[in-house]
Image (cartoon, rainbow, N blue to C red):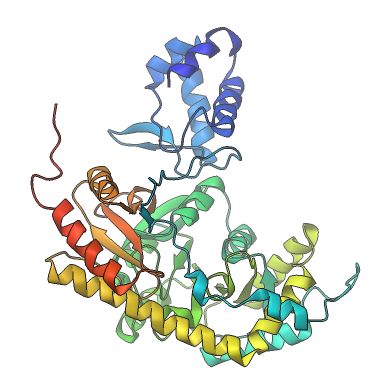
Length: 443
């Protein structure tokens, strides 16, 4: 953070310090996760009072640009809401990158075939925002999973849907219960909106009921839960856990419940919804993992008020999701070959995930992945584990961005495109890397 010394003359206020830090993030001079000096030291470097520096950091913290933790100081957030250069995790030549959470490209449909068979629409201002046939297909999918489908809208992906639902009901400072470990991009989104994260531990069956009850008793305003294919832990809510969570939620009827069923059937396990007959709720389902990450489309179901507010806010901004995109998704949903491909992908992802879990277990390694595309492996030292495995040709995702506070450190492995031979070799290398003494540090 020595670059801040250049502000000694040019910074005269908290607002200017905020602007300089944001500019350095945008340019790449400050990286995600980089620790900042203490308030007193930073004040000396930039020539401001400690109170002024503390005010600047408070503003950056309010908007999710920096994070402050007890005994760990202040650092740049893992995904600060500042556009600019963000270097990806380094991938050595020849290494296998299992860090990004992508589906297997070989199990995605060929979009060119659907585009060639589709009559692309010409839509003008003032026309309906949602294709009627797409709406009916989406309604049948929701109905099949016992999700009320009377009120639906189409948005630009799961995160767009969740952001708009939160904006429809919450204010900065409100508390949101989240899974811990949970989806890093969701944490970043909540922080960027000035919302407070209330972490709730998860196990293989999803968010733990006793933790959720504690969070709600502390005044939590909303709950975001992934019912299956949870990222990064792979948790899947079963019927028993759904009943336990349902009993807790009944006692807090005013809490907003958002279910992020981003994988849908691709998760490989049944859905057990939590929404019941709540007054405020939303369920979002994306096509990204099944049809392709570049298809930025998600369907949102919810209560009448929530959907009306979301649609109204959408109308004030982009207006609608491109009807060219809606037509393409509808064509894919209609195609029996694509339906068969998605079913095969779900089976394949289940097999690959379970293959790695079995190989890890055979090597004495504890891991989690009840559903979805990822496996979570607890470790004592994330940085050392990542480094040791990178030396062996594997790039895994460090767990720190996926943890709020209490969750045990770990690493995430995306298994979507992992072959059986690779799973066995990876498990062997993980066992070797985690052997006591291998991760010890020197000098």
